[in-house]
Amino acid sequence: MKRLLISIVLLSFILTAGISSAAYVRKTDTRIQTLCTRIREQALTNTDTSAAIDELCNCWQEHCKKLSFIENLNGVSAISAEISRLPALSSADPADLIEQIDFISQQCRSLSERHIPNLKTLL
Amino acid sequence: MLTVFIRSFILYFVIMAAVRLMGKRQIGDLQPSELVITMLLSNIVTLTVEDISIPMIMGIVPVFTLVSIDVIVSYLSLKYRRVRRVVSGSSKLIISNGIIDQKVMRELRFTTDDLMAALRAQQIFDLADVQFAVAETTGTISVCPKKTSAPPTTKDLGLSPENTDPPVMLISDGEVSTAALNFLGLDMAWLNKTVKAHGTTIPDIFIMTAENPSKYTIIKKENKR
Image (cartoon, rainbow over all chains, first blue to last red; front, side, top):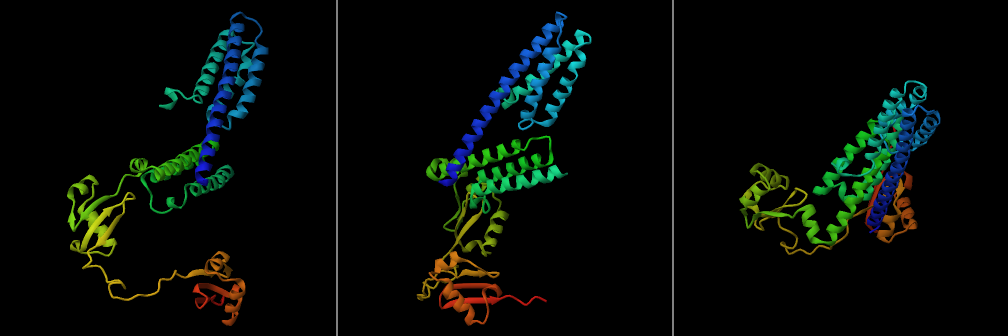
């Protein structure tokens, strides 16, 4: 009976932690996607993107620390490397910046999709 | 290198805790569900130990999820016969009244060699000596020999020996088991007196077993060279 109780508590804990982590990843990804869209729009209109890029870099740095506990380090490091290229691109050709921001947006989305159970990730 | 060492160290205790949570049955004969869990656990942990890019939590979560599910399924099996049948299957009679059920053997994909090996493992070398044999859910074969082939029991011989509990270990390598003392209804005073009567001390005893206060065995430690 004691084992059963421990098992039920453990399963509940794991399930709660899983739901919380999925909710956190989704929430942060929404923020990252919003920032990516803003940077894209600013690049298209040739306005200053440095503030939005800084915000995205800071947001990713915070997110990255938490992600390292629940995500494969290789995947996180790959996106970190791509994001670190953004400040240099802010003053370069907007086309390059748009290409880079689209790539980052897609990578971040696929990373967050892995944490939210759906038919694709489950199968 | 150091990271792998620390991860292995932590995962050792995680797996120990998981196996303890599963209970003693896991260490002995495995039910089908337990075998699956054991195989999965070893694979999950190996991956987490070797690949340091995988977070520890990704190894710990599946381990405890699987073990917890196993414990809950075991509990349901214990409570509901139907669940038990689905999870563990049911034992099958292979030999009944000395006659082999070939249909059951085919169902179990059990060869004649397997059957003979199982019988030999139980010290039965002639098929004619078997009254019935059952294939258990753990895969082992339980055999009941014919009464004519079974060794006579004290009951068959008309004897009535006293039924006693087997001896328990009171001292192991100089360490006293208070649980064993309590089981026999004895105390330290009796133990010290008995040990002293043999001209030795508790730390100098290798093994001491006892059935009751008057029936015990003492083996002293050998002198170190």
